[in-house]
Image (tube, rainbow, N blue to C red; front, side, top):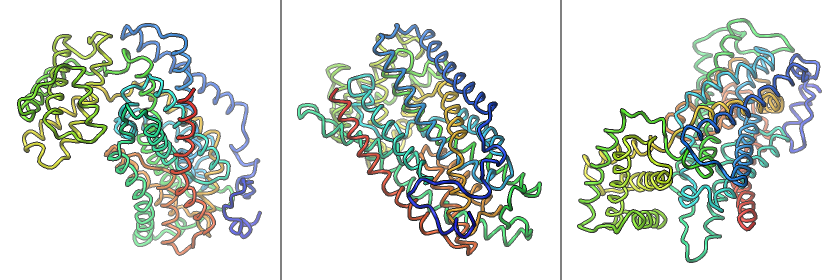
Length: 548
């Protein structure tokens, strides 16, 4: 198909037949080879085997009781679905990371996927887990505290399956949809459905709207940053770098000059690493929720927390307990069970700044400090006490996080103590085992091996009216890597797809190339429709699964 016909075709909602002369089946690396298929299945088997080994090892080390057959089956299915989400995520977001180097012939598709997968892997391994738990904190508190209950598994299956279905649908049409949007839309749908289905006698807080709003702001602003910053960077390059070859589009299968290849490989590396550090975490938080629900003894508390951190944890907890008592006005909670109920209800009704809640928080804090002090370290907390301690720590962290944002709740010194207390609580509960990170990284890489081609064509040829130049690709990727990395530092999930696609559009606009309105319209429609459609799918699935 000619370039003119290709531009006229745009990105309609018909399944894309890739007739671009640059990506025929005869292109190097585009036809699946026996060695490629073998590598795929070796990595698949290795990833699943390592996940199983890690699961068994962690359960054995914690002396967790053997799981019932039914629980084991549900756990296995939930983990497969969660890794399936990350696999499909690789279709969209990781494919964007390799789009420029493949489109410009800087690397062959096979080499690009391996290279990108390696740095995705490193990005996942070095990630902090902040994004993973930002995703979790949007969910209803009762579902988080009871992840292994009759409501926990329907929640996991509903939100992951809804996100997978929408991702596959948009991928089939070659539209750069966001896995982040799909997952967050699914979380919104599950939260609303959980609230609607709750019996009148059992109040449910529904979604935690504070974290939801923060995440939605990040998802909205990051593509705008990508558009403006990438366009600005291209103009700056034109002002400072007067090399004509940098501003040319690739021709046929000819690779660019060596220095341009090095630049594009470097920018691909940056996007891949930052993508692993952000997008790779989105499924990890849900995997941890699955593990905590099925095997709380092994996974509810961070047993790798060093013994050297315990004295500071205990001291800070006692200081926090004293502050709570001072704000309780002389009220005392009847016991730990009642204290949990009081704090849980306060979080659901968002009425936390009250004396009885402070009294309950003092009780929970004293119980946490007492358990750790008695056992010497978190990893020695007895199995029967682990679920309650984990829930106490989560409730205290959620309540304190809300209180420190309440004007006048604490003085300056007390606020600093509360922030330190929250940090210790989160360190004790928010962690990701290495085997979970490795499994997610492998799932992302396998998804990229399968689905890179559709997204590469769209990014390279269907956003602007002219084909992507080397400078435009590099500008878009530099901005994408920086934006995604900054978001990860703040614990905010963002969309690699939308940031990079917006960056490419920004460079096209800055270059005066013009934009293909049909592609942009379809991308905008996917952006707008993803949240409500994923929410509806997840809400309906949750209602069906919850009733079974």
